[in-house]
Image (cartoon, rainbow, N blue to C red):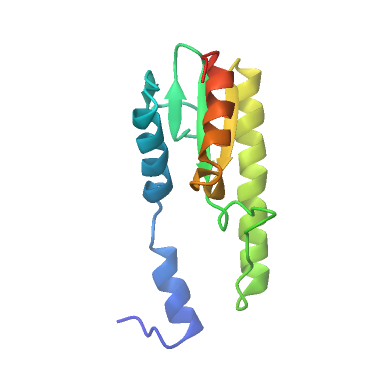
Length: 139
């Protein structure tokens, strides 16, 4: 039985958690696509780096990056406990993001990285314009 009152117990529990993507932010983008009639996208495609959305015909890969997990310069906050671990973890995530984007671009893909906060009501139109421009569609 794990003791959640100790750092070791919490660490053990968290190490067992496996991510399956940021469903809430991805679903926000799905809703925007549907609301604005943007079609041709697929999720869970077998492309390098596991993009959240892929437009095969246009060779566009879209990633929705959570502000915390990917180190958003505006909203990324470092936890007060275990700072060294979190700093290194987020740094690894950012390095992986750069490698994935670079690899996809070298393979002829256009890559769009969208911050979680860019899906807010205030910024969603700007985000949609970025996507439709990359797709070569009029917004």
